[in-house]
Image (cartoon, rainbow, N blue to C red; front, side, top):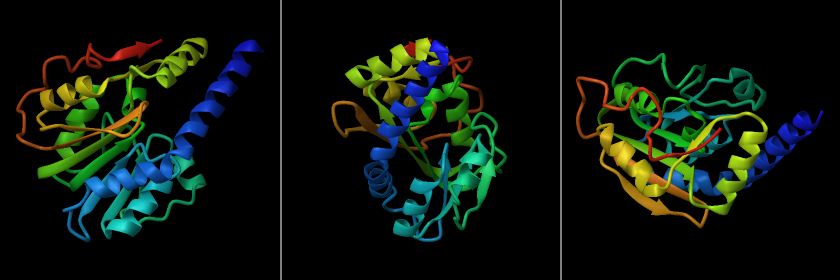
Amino acid sequence: MRWRSTFDLAEVLYDLVTRRSQPRSAAVVIRNLDGVPRGGRVLDLGAGTGRITMNVEASTGTRVTACDVDLLALTAGHSSVTGGVVGADGQALPFESGSFAAVYLVYVLHHVPDQMRVLAEVRRVLDSGGRIVLVEFDARSSLVRLFRLLARATRRRCSFHAPGSLAALLEASGFDAEVGVLDRATFVVKGRLLRRLSRTPRGACGPDRRALRAE
């Protein structure tokens, strides 16, 4: 019973933080998609209920595909976007290579067991010079320290990064990387595909070792 109540508390806290930040997160994504042409294909990876997806599509005129491992969450959120709704794991995306002009992930990567594999899939589905935008919690923040305690209590694994660590991970995956600090707890890293790697980058067997892991 105690474990269940802790699990519920963790869910409520996490949802509260991420939901309250959704309008700003959408604005950050929209700003960093500047230059993607109207009608260009964009992937929202880990779209959740699709609220940010719809905001981004309406503001940019791009065709956004909402993708999440939890298809029920997407359909429950009544996400209606021109790029469609897809239930899939980010570690094995069901899209052809070079399908998208941009991919963005908002508070998603820290949930992923194999972050290098997801970034390799993002690289694969991007067209030449495609963009990636990542909005994340800063591993050094007090908020993440609280998340890590709750993750241990609920037996979850989360791997958070500091801005420099995530930028290095992007660069190792074949992107350039530019960091922007949003506040004391969150940041954005944007990148552009520089090259196509013929082999999986070293370290692809798991998250970057510089991440702070909660388990």
